[in-house]
Length: 425
Image 1 (cartoon, rainbow, N blue to C red):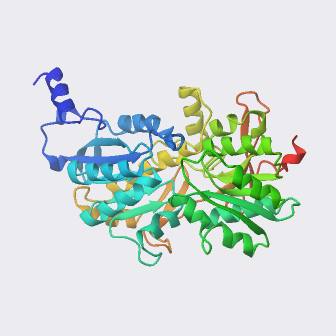
Image 2: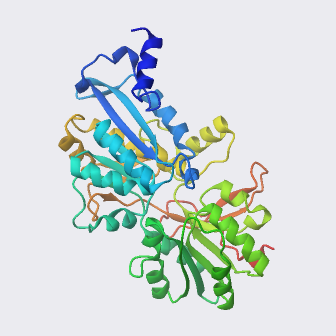
């Protein structure tokens, strides 16, 4: 077949958009090709979480272009990339494609909505899967498991909702407030995990002496927060917290201004992870605070490229012209963990690959990913800090994210103290 005929045939089979196909090796036996599936939110409401993924994937294709040498044998590698469009129903379809149709040897899962359907099917069919970028409680508990039980073939690395609570409270304790915290949460897996009375934010608030004023769960389609704002304003809360996406917060914060609601602190999980979300607030983005997953200040290097966190962020900014964003670290580390597991296994033997993941203790660009010694089965808990967005002094970008609390990750250098919003206006 000519190259043109082969491309045409690949398109007919739905392969053209699936990742990379190594034409010179397409006739090789299936046993000499490792197929890695990837699923994430490349489009839809959660697309900012996947902003760096196409950029990372291109680098992985380059890294893997000559295959992977494992146990004296070189395997070709095919990447099967799927967009779940930030839709739960689409996630189930993608799970079926990767597990049943594509028959991937390993599946990497970036988006939270994909992790449950992919995980359920991967476990049922005995396909190893590794996921990240979702609090581990939201990955484990909706699937009816416990830290001592785990899962047959699926693994996860990320921090927990309890780690966010520790960092949020650590930031707030550094300033004087009335200790009234108004909360609201998206009605989805991570939002429900944060709202959990025993494992989430409410329990941490009560233990630390803060009073929660709950505004409840809200739907993804919500665009009117007047009732929530009214309730929090009437209670005179100094702090607003919970779990929201950037577009929701832009709407809420604009409506809060119209209602004359002026809290002293706004610390929202997920909403302020990205520069774009803070920039969208204009001058009113100054002082927003958040959990910090990853930063160029992290003192770690990639196990694949040897790049430091600072070098990886600088590479992104140089090649894209955009400010670094927190998911870069985890988008890269997901491939680090997957490739390390393949190298430590017989990659065509599902049980061997599963056991290799379970035995991993890997230094990555986000820090240690240790499944081997974790007290939570199938989970490697990673580090977290607290940060505040402040108007940038360099002029390179409108805002910069400064570490203001490092109590749970002292290896991350603290860069500033938390400042009340009233002292910024």
